[in-house]
Image: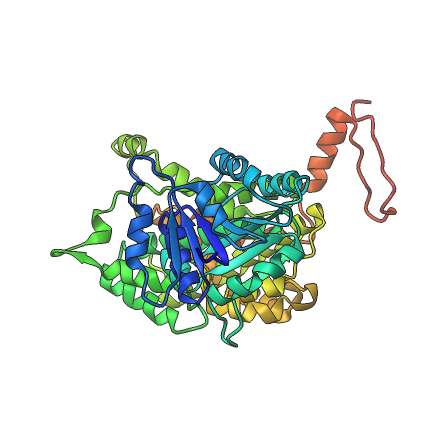
Length: 465
């Protein structure tokens, strides 16, 4: 039996799509899936989808699957993150040899990836954590891939991964080695946090606009924006969603207003708290999903609460510029979290390169991300460039109009509010934190610094004398 260059364990939606992508690029492939109830036909179903030019061997016996791989073996595991992944690793580990490579392509928490890298190193097995973005279509046609772990191990799988990745506007693969251990999964986690906020901004705009416009008209507005610097994959698909019909009715109007989540958004918020980074927009978008799940309580309370509406309408131009404002803040917060995470974990992460591999294949690809590859070079941030400071300053009035009209119309736009509040605080020279520090010194003798004193000089006052 001819041995394969690469192996995939787990043939769910993403695993199957990536497998077909790999085989389509000319790499010989072995695939494995367990024979548990509901998954008995996954191997045979994948083999039915392969073309004549694809070299794929399918297995339901794990030992036979591992024996079918060339050494050093390269295994991509595409299963649910968490304990199940540890179980699979423990099962395959006795059959592996020194120098073999295990790649986790799921949405694992970066701390688990760090642990697995260290544990497997003791067995002389390389472990890579790969963030995969793009959904089913991206996995099949060209995802964005963010790989963390051993740099030498990455070089051994780079040809395959860079072949299957999406391509940027210069035809370079949207795949990169991020840094050591859990860095790839950390960057993917932040990607998802940015994605949460981008989706929530569009939902809040929809909530404002539907009070005055039909779905078709809102789609027309979004389509016009998509032809500008605001163009993005999420804006494009939102336009499609708004106009999709089921029979005579808009499908969107039939969908229950309860949003799900898989945890990566909340992980980003927790990481920001741990590292002292402010990602208030991500956090507000996570909480918006949580509160949407309280459907029964929301319906119950709505029967008793009567609010007057003033029906003020923001101009479409005001909304457009407010949206532009909020997206800058969201991306600024996201890349700030990446920088803080890199500092805390001793990762060498190039934010410009991360922006580049997010220009195609991934869910948050956009014209703005393409511009970001330039603005984030040389360890710069958006706010190191006058063009963004001027844009934010010029758009302040328009996002305030949006917020006022949302209040008058009783529409929750917390993610927009957090964008404005962040910029307001960040651009205010004197915040009331002096009172906070005085209170801390009063009840806990935490000391304080004085204006004009040296950075290393601290004071304490006996406030009750």
